[in-house]
Image (cartoon, rainbow, N blue to C red; front, side, top):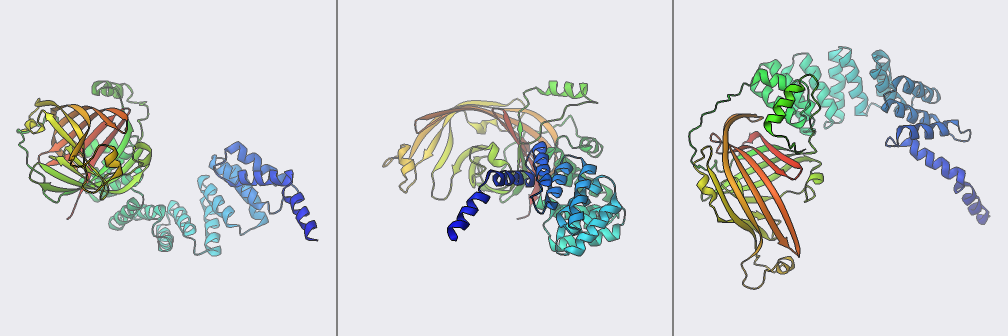
Length: 489
């Protein structure tokens, strides 16, 4: 008898028809399936007389139409699914969304009302109910629904954002600020949440914070509408900055500055060409390149002996950092720099090796006092500081007994104070000296030779004693860091 059962199993469940059904089911269920392929798979299942519970296939096909923007067709499929099972939550939720997109708000509200009755513990049901009520200007009811959504799931971005919008519309600016900030903390790289924060602060009459968040939105999304126009109204920069020669003074010991870092494709046009093209394309400007990766990094500064500034780095949030860095998205925990600018010592993980940059000819300190036109050129190299404890990797790189360091590479560099410039960053408006550093270097290790060309600019603020903006161009990528806030000790 058991033998017969096993034979039956293999005949039925491993038959070509069953395998085809399983393949079609996978294609129908997955939202990542290409549109035409997904429609065909769902339709084949729906038309199969032997396929049971086909109500979900109608819902999935409707979902595919909805993702493609065909909301009216999607609603027909959701209707069919709900004729089979009137309390099928997936179909009710997707139909509510499609009805909303079609402007059929009262019908959408009926679906979310039923969803809440079916499952009062699902935060999304309350969120979408509140969103529709917001659109219908039933603000008090919207606040109630969104508050219930947040009580069920406090870290859902859209519930926080939507309730902030309702508060702002009702001119409840303080709770709107709190909700927008909570949404920003949940997902800090969405440009529109910074836009809403900026709008809210502007409505409050707080021009400084409005400008701060418009600038954040502009950095994250250079194509965000209205940021440039609004910033032009809020911030007027002085094109003729007159700074006295700047002697070096170390930054405040313990200063902590948070930066927004973005990685962009490098625009090879010069500044004049960019300006001319922007004017020529005033009414039909092509979209600007979007950041390929973003990060929030705090730099905590410790001053040693004046010239040495230790920078401890804290990566607070990131998006796609592993795609644009050779270290898989990791950043060093701590570096020693010369006057906050040039790498002096790079420390790897605890107990690991240290690397340092040395200048043999040309002393970077002679760039000070900073005056436009001051220039320094020279040569140097890279060294591995041999660890006290035995390390096989260090030994393979030449760290033998009584060898304090190993030379790994050479570099040629040039430094110049390019100009004075007043700039606006999220942290505020600053008068700065712009210092450019160019490096042509070669590194050798484990039989490999790596060459690189690097160009870095710092916008150094005499007021802060540190830089408020930095760009670093290597190959076809440019990384820029923008100071956004000073953290309390």
